[in-house]
Length: 132
View 1 (cartoon, one colour):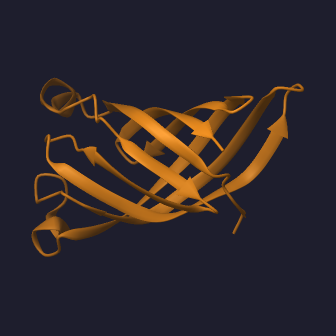
View 2 (cartoon, one colour):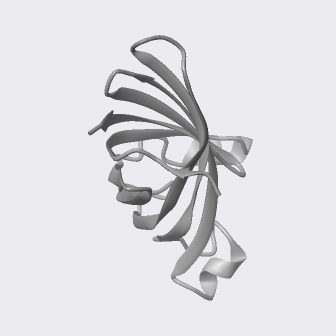
């Protein structure tokens, strides 16, 4: 559902945990390196517990709109699988090293440079990207 997101490289990710207890203890600079190619994404990051995580899946846009000649806006989603979490994140993580996840996405892009916002349950994150 939706159109495959454009190909891009992500550099950096910062998170805000909506749970007050998590804000004080969890990592907020996730040092993401990742990318999307023809709507398929993959990447690695340091998760909230400073453990290395790997993620992959699909990324789609529901809506894209040009705000001007050089500026555009999009709304979409990302679904996939992620490693690197244990029972501190979810009880099912104690039974499987790979977990499913979903994020709602919104981004603003100026020419080939973009700024993305993502929401996944109890975490808001933001990343910068370069389209190619």
